[in-house]
Length: 332
Image (cartoon, rainbow, N blue to C red; front, side, top):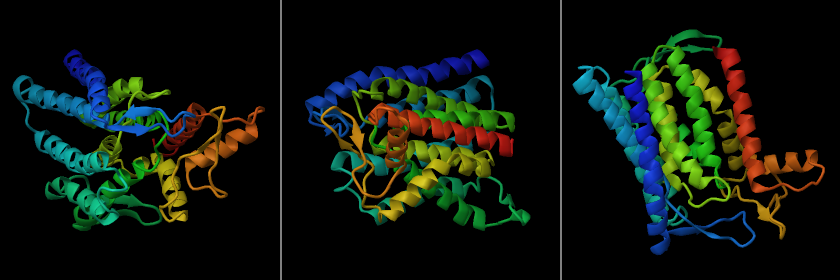
């Protein structure tokens, strides 16, 4: 069984890996490109690579369903898995529109929020998760119908939108997704929900394939379709695995990012100012994102005082790993 599952996980990797070169050529030939903002020459890079990731993870999950149906003769999890797929596809719909029309020209903020909330309906109608949660100072609290009607949609909304905020640097979104989903895969495995670990591994495999093309210097950008789908999957795994508390703790970097973005009234971007030598500078007097904070800290601790794009990604990834380690120590 483990060998068969491993093969299906590699299938997700190879689907994404084989699709991406063709997608890059097609996107470039059709002008579906964006400027690499942290390069001196602002190279033009293919957009929308998240489509290949979504295809890879979806194909892997469907293979997993077929294994449960025809080999293991079990349909016990099918409802939950199909609900999970529905959340992924509906939330990705927002990203597809933004990628095609441009996130500034596409859907307005209210419409984005409405569609992402709509994507939570598949989990709401199957009453996913456990309505009883441990709340600090109150102990076990049964939220009853408030859990599917309020907590689930807010969880999906928060994770999906906030994961989209910490972005814009080569390899950042993909590497962050790999790190967080790996932590969640381990958490669900040791808490008795190994099927969710397998689901997470499909996305991890697809993200690893994507990272090969997206790492510095990027040959393709993820687009909002990737960030929305990864953020939604993180929320779904947390809800179905009943690991909301540790998942929220893992999301501390994104909570901080949202706070900093709200400081700028959601109008300040995470991009940096590029010097002629390729090093980066904070574009504003104040800090409006973890990316800016990373640049500021690195400039203070580096003897050369010069900070480059990939160093910002390494710094944020290091911070994320530290948060995850603390989360394991506190909750597990």
